[in-house]
Length: 88
Image 1: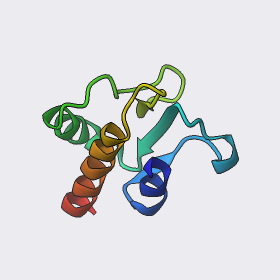
Image 2 (image 1 turned 120 degrees about the horizontal axis):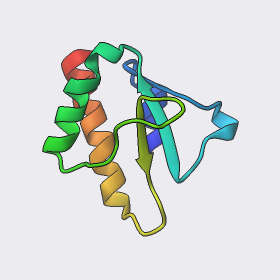
Image 3 (image 1 turned 90 degrees about the horizontal axis):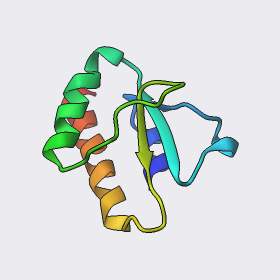
C-alpha cells in the first residue's frame, strides 16, 4: 500500500530501487524539497511522528514494524494522497 502511493504520487520518489525496498524502514523524498516542511506539518496534524529524515539520505523514513497496525500505514498513505491533491 505504501510503496504503491510512492510510485503513483508524482510528488514523491523512493530512495531505493524497487527490488531493494525495505518492508520495515521505507525511505522516500519529496521531489521538491521546498515542500518538506509543509508535508511534515500535515503529518504532524495526522498524528504521525518521527518521520523526518534518514541520516544518510535525508527526506523521510516511515518505520513500519510488525507491531504497527495496517491502519497506521493507511493514515500515512491518506496524508500523502491529500498532499498530492493539494500540491500536485
